[in-house]
Length: 449
Image (cartoon, rainbow, N blue to C red; front, side):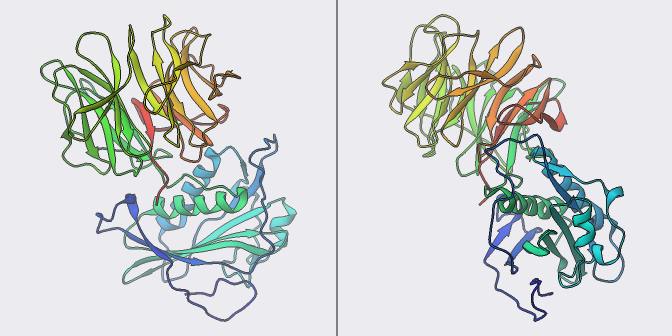
């Protein structure tokens, strides 16, 4: 294994700082990816991109295809990691990804050995950050080394090494994309996270899970009925959802985020919808057996333990603050659906919205400062406001956007727009479709551990 320091030719091998398994579960024996953290000698750490100061000028960055360090070239490893990296970084809306036909052709500029790389050709074309890497196939799988450089300073920003027993290009790419964002912005990336969604079939709707950029979509339920409103648990291990039963009731079920046999929590014969998790891991659901829907806390045995919200008309779609001290919900208690906020026990109800029609599906930012929701204004669109209901701003104008959900860093929003899951920045810009067609009601999972 190469020394990754640009200032020394001595070999150093640091012990792995921790072990990481793909898909967020130690239950996948075929795929063990081990992080070995390296830190190259570099200039004083600095923030390259001020993420809270939006700029029309994006940050110029180049991603070079991986180079084989062994016998023979594996075109998949050479291209796929860099392709996924480019796609991930484009989703942020922060980067100007330099086209490959503008890359310098000199051998030194394409070197992967930090001691031999020539940075001047990259600086001359305006590249402010350079990504390259190498791979080598061994008896135990693929060894991959990834580098991020500052060409102007001619130094490493960061480097990482991965060992993969399978062809998990996306795992390597997502993890290094997270590292790039962290090093350049000072904030964590979210490319290693998952999104649950409803997959529309001919006669059914099932729950699926995909990478946040739409890769690796797969169905995790086989209920052969109508499943709706998936909600990731705070630890990412479970997904709660509502499912139509044969007796025309709608019940709450929970399934592992990697799939498996679902557990039906309720069997009360009523309407049980819009499950959401408190930060402490309890479930809150909207329930009705008389036509008047109220919100309850529920334990894992399906028993309602506390009534959180109840009024004439419906109370539905609770969403919790990140500290668990309050929740926001939609209610007809003022006529058409509007948004209200209450304390964790249901007391101290405050009305948040006084304008708009059918304000629904609120989601509280993980940063704690904003609430995004959908509202009917000629069509469904997304709006964002402060948690006290002030400064409402429209962030989409497509007329077909619903079911918003926040990324765990509070910088991005996923929603279903036009029958497709899309991603956007928190201000609605850089709206990008991801995942399969017919994907609805996304739920963004927590940050990868």
